[in-house]
Image 1: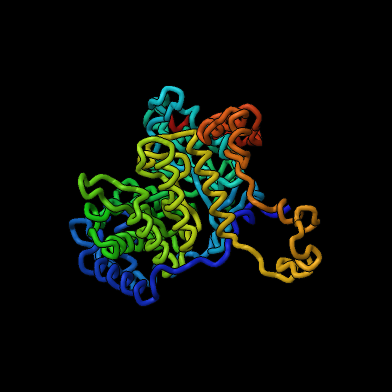
Image 2: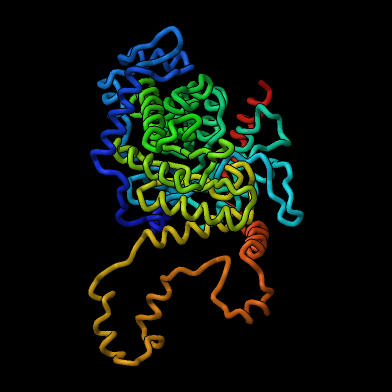
Length: 482
């Protein structure tokens, strides 16, 4: 049976920018880093960078000579593997795959029956992790909501603990806020893979660092990133410069801000732990020209994602970008259209990981139904991006000759072989209208709701070993008592 990662393998991607344009953005970002600088609030990170040759002033602004940037970014690995709980779920980031993750900023859950929001709880993380474990084209699970029914200081750790016990897939932590949390999450992950040394070899968890656009990196989040680097936990550097608000309104200018922030974070990581994995990413957006609001999934946001991918390719780093998580306020048609165009753009231009399945309203609202619809979108995008073969057998000259003019291909053996490999939708079918009505006339959201219930009723994720469970429970208990 092919490896799990093989179902996400895709063919050649396209380029949005020329090499000259990529170089222009890179050179502009280097000028910004050297003259304007980046304010880095982490004292430890500033010390590392100063020892590496950067210039630090008394206002925590770090200025980066060009040779320092180029030297440090060369230390970051070009390819990495995001590991699953077992090797069967490993995901190589080598430029030839297209992976998807859930989203992780949810603060509420959509109740489709009442058409209202409800408060998110820890059980929502368990349920979505179980669903994510079952969904064949969801690559990575990220705890999807803030659990409001646990101590606020422990919600990130408790969500990670539940996720690790509910899916065998790679785990991405988005909401870590300080070094203590990061260190404790690394302890949880080490309990799963066996030891801290094994965690450095097998990247079972990855984490997210979001710069504070424009041109700043938070101190506590920066300290957390240093802990991740020490443990060789891959860091998705996810800039969020909003064109017109926290970045220039020109798309190229917004990319310059993002590139400068991303390179500063890469330098910070490599100065602290040379060879630690860093992932080039972003979730850039264009402001609403009337209100200044965040407009994820707009055409300009799609182009910014593609531009960020281009700069990741220019740097030769693994690439992870926001490719779903639309501005649509509720699940449904708008959310699906925005996600489909955004994700397809990312796939075509070379994203390796896109973040955001299942959470419209700017990644703040968990929808179980949208989670399945977005998964269906991802399946279709992977199928399109895989392309098709042009071989002697595929050209079918002999078959066309045997079938002849006016013949029928339905009864041919080759037809059966190829149809078996074709895409079959999970949430809709090709029945005639009358047949669809007799079957209940259900729209995809209704089918998705039924599918969610079926998955939760029938799917039992592979449990963790008891000793790992016990170690993780001790880690969580110790954190809560602090």
